[in-house]
Length: 327
Length: 305
Image 1 (cartoon, rainbow over the protein chains, first blue to last red):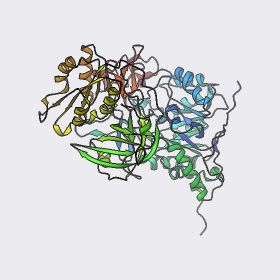
Image 2 (image 1 turned 180 degrees about the vertical axis):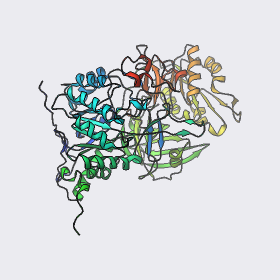
Image 3 (image 1 turned 135 degrees about the horizontal axis):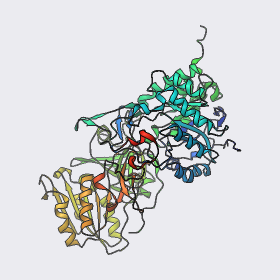
Image 4 (image 1 turned 90 degrees about the horizontal axis):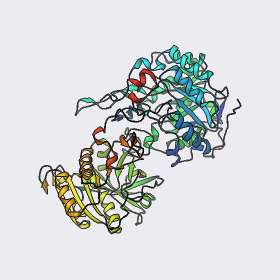
């Protein structure tokens, strides 16, 4: 099978004196700002506000094999500097995605990082098989960490062996030229353990972090706000957790490319993630409040890098880990 | 019905508050929002950023467009009616003229207008849910339609637009639950008589979910189509977050959880499964019981309320 990763030139919205090329396990992106899974659908809606080809990549909402209705409403609760969601992976399934959404992204010049989710190792493997060779597929993001499942024991990313099983199966069924990223949960005792298990199983990179499991009560009804009772916490409230996870994993596995996400809403938030060790970033919840956020973050990140004297994004990745300067 | 539900590309603009005034229990805001007014049609809504630059309120608040003016001294303006429910709406209601407000709009699918110019349209509004009905009434008038209004609220201070309605409509019926003005009761208490008198061909409604359910059912029993604008809670308003869903029956007879922000907020009343709002009915496309794959995680999820 012949498949090469396409690199489409993005419109130059950045400062020309900083090279923003992002390297993600063999995948080269024109810039490091991506959408976050579940916060950009499959790109069409945001394309009304900016050209999705100008992003480093579009990370799609997690695709499952079958259509899925998601959870009952209410599905959302705003919390201090954040929000809880319990969507439950609503989507039309892989057939619809392959027929309508991925071709649309490809036609519009967007690089697609396709997020996949399943309830079993076999389901993940089947999704990888179905996506193999699909035009426009730049990388896979394996969502083993969605908190909106009824049984916490079924969150693969809570177990190193379960994570490795899924990642290994997806890697085996994916073209060698397409990097596989595993998306991890921060709700674990030691995220480095899980990260290492995924990399050993063949993950080319890691996406850090998924939402944190949380909940809120309605003080009028004195019951849970969310139809799904618990939900995933995202937004600026979780950013310090995300920075910590990226920091820890980059310290332990410095050669593994990381996509950093969790509460980013400015270019300087993105810069913080890069300095902690992320080679690229995803802008998620910020899109709900500001549909133009990804392109704004890109502009601000470019300025933030130049202001600090970086001539390339690569030089800034993990820069905060450098040894103390001699005084 | 003509297919007036054509999608208009929304804009994101840096606007500002031009005027803010109290109207009963509500706040009527005029926002300078260049480009949005020109595109707005009755039933469209806008999503406003709240709380200022470094706020902890990260989600937009959605409001139906009450009025829009494409031209003016300050450029295009849109008017919205704010009811204070929480910290975001409290912030909006407390802002003075010239406060910058980021506006996204127009969003959603607008009301469809009757193809028949002589049609009789009955417009039903609950509380400040009546806001989008006045622009609709103007559009209906331009088509030569008869317009009648029913406005209901818990109390007199929670009615919105009774004077506008009197200026525009053949007849206006007002109900309040506490009887502080108009007929004591709810809109559906007076709707059958008004429909008989007006010879209603189509009902338009906007208000709380319970009112829409009752109005839609009543219209259906009279063989009259209804168009209902729902007020679901939204995080984004642009179709990416999947929080504002409700069960709606499609052209193929199948129930799907659809987004009220992009597939609504206006729905044909007979298509919405009003009794099942807040749940995922078992026969919904992709509902847990109907999902063949996915193992336990799928089989045990959903429908937990």
